[in-house]
Image 1 (cartoon, chains in turn orange, cyan):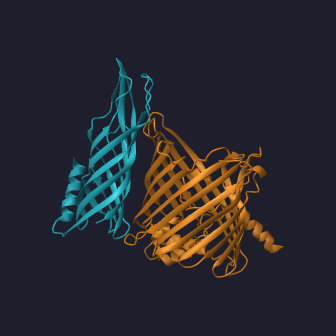
Image 2 (cartoon, rainbow over the protein chains, first blue to last red):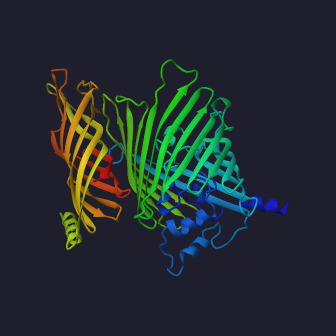
Image 3 (cartoon, rainbow over the protein chains, first blue to last red):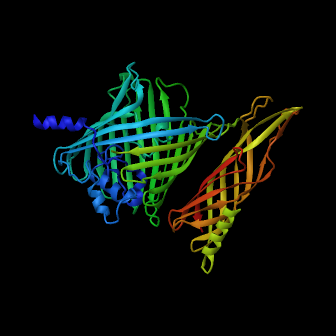
Length: 391
Length: 188
């Protein structure tokens, strides 16, 4: 009874935590797989102890910290309460992201807005000290109440993750519950053409089962999608996705993804290749790309060959010094692979900064273009700033 | 003027008394840029945009000394061009089948952030051909001059000893005439 009371109290209390993020770009530091830092084998969600420590002692800058404090000591302080080791079985966390953006920058039509992008409470429960059995929960508060699942009910929060992870053998992981869909590279920007553009944004979770086999040089995963059971039955996306990566050389991984899901009225097909490359002579810097094709089909099928679209993303992370990076991203998307078909392009340039412990700051200038065969439109420029804090 | 002088001094100081490394690269790119476009019928004039997008092949040579260098190259591009974003005072409908060809010379300065990443300003000089004549004989289409100069920056990343990624971002003017280039170069 006492244990359950303590558990409930801890779950409700807002607590200090070291909870920033690790990204696929961090292959530039030599961290090739997501499970190094995350409980979720494919990234996103809560960081484990190693991820928190790694972030504190290697990724984030350390201004105002005495040189007498070693990076190892910073790692020791990266937990829930700095310097305090929690019971082995519990790891809570908090994440906050605030976004300021301005559309039509430098014009008389400039419009700015501030959004509380993410307010997240995480909880990981270890059922054994070797973490073979781990339960993970991630509760997110929406920027404003919304009818997230089309049921005519406004809600102000939702679970992004609720799963049990089992390390069945040294190489086999099984996750059962609610999590993000497994496909492609989970880049920083959820509005990227390779993420939100394919229906894989921050609200597109599925209930299901994920099985991953991980070797030191390669890994493969299969995910069964039972659909998001919180959604209306006719909108639940059911099917399969597969992904795999192979280490071509040190800090260089090549991979592929396939997704095939259906609702009652639509079918989704995606296939992609991707590559993540840590720059060996520029520690912390990396280059990644993903390119794929997609089909969004209606049911019943209409006559004729359904259109196949394409998308591509290339992202360059340049490490200037510890905690300070330049991030450049180029994207392209076309609804139908045809010379005259409209296409979208986006280029963004900015900074990905970790100026203090437990803090991330993103600044970017974004240029959006729409191209068609018989018309041109003015570019759209946007400015964005994002603050991510764990406290 | 002061900043340009500082850049030049920095550049000259880094190349003094250093051995030169000469590199040739050959590659393919995606290029995209906007130009201003004006259409007129009689006394009526309307301003809009011309958007160009296509593929390019390029050859580039660079000379680097220690932490800085210079480079220059040639680029040939073909693709499609389309016009739009007019205010509507002139009735202009693009035909949708317009092609362009582009030749460019791309002189640049190079600063080595480290052994794998190079950045620097670039001043591309373009010669562009596109048939902008309208089928409506009373409609006059006035694109930019065929020769024009841009300004911008370049980032080059050496993936390994053979391949590098190149990104250009710049403008032809401060009136929304931006250009991009993203490509892959093979080091000869």
